[in-house]
Length: 237
Image (cartoon, rainbow, N blue to C red; front, side, top):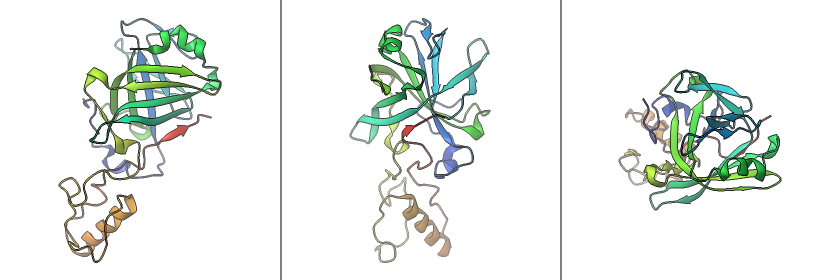
């Protein structure tokens, strides 16, 4: 089973593709601190609130009883709001569209979700049947607010001890150029390529040079960013 905070191997290639037939999507699952039922956007009470930024609802995962989990489609935005010195994000702002009439009342029905467990997932629609193909950021909700346009939730790693790599919500590589994780060793004086600007095209150029020089082609496979992961706001239709 994929451990929380671990990027699955199946994402290694897909993550660098900004345009995919089956895109990456964010999903959010909220459960009560004591297992109590919560109000879903449709007003029904369920063991969990499950939302996705994808444009259509889908099923992914199973409950403890073996029933398939249903994920609501809703406009969802993911933004970093606090990070540590190692560029890992410990608190993430999740904004939800008010398309379903979400409001302060909905938050109040659920005690503002404060201290509720929350798991943010990154899924790829082509691998929903693979139980290992997901990235999970487990945390808890530490803040909530509502306006006419949206509901905002703050998801914090807290005592769970996990942080989400910043490169999951940015397009640039966070690795040290020529460091162990980067691994680029050609053009040592930079006369051919100059400094690396940490973008995917720059990484691809270095892979082209590796191929031309007959070296092992590690780039852009080792690129540290995730341009295929959606960022900012995503609106369901």
